[in-house]
Image (cartoon, rainbow, N blue to C red; front, top):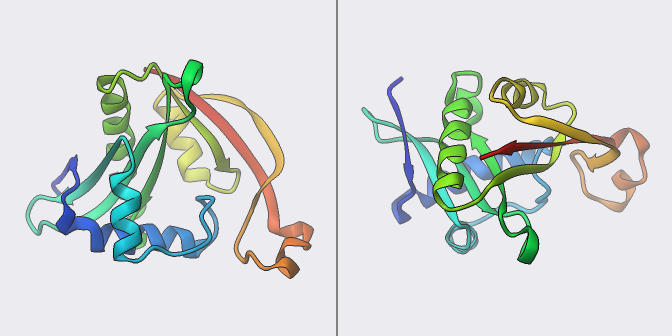
Length: 172
């Protein structure tokens, strides 16, 4: 695969929504519980400081994406946050690493000083391994901070639906 990471175009939105919704449907990452449609995706992606896609140079296909935005505002506005999504059929092929590396460079270029991840699910071992490899520092663990899968009231009352979240940061 010959992949380039570049700023998204409006024509990428259907593929971005499809990939984003795969992650949401898995219920193992992202706080969102509702899928995006084209209109919602267009609004969501355009509201970020930066969105980029991992594009196969030969086919032009979008294989993954990230969103980058401030983690907070005011006196903490120099800290950014990112979320990454890779097509479920291409996970484990190195696309996530390309996305994370690009987001670190872009975050710095946008004037952010720190990248912070607020809620990496403890079961997301591939992401945790990658973040540590790229120099992210683990801040701590919030026990039971992430609710997996179903978001119904009945599912929310099942203790096994909760797992720890890990916080990470990286100086840009």
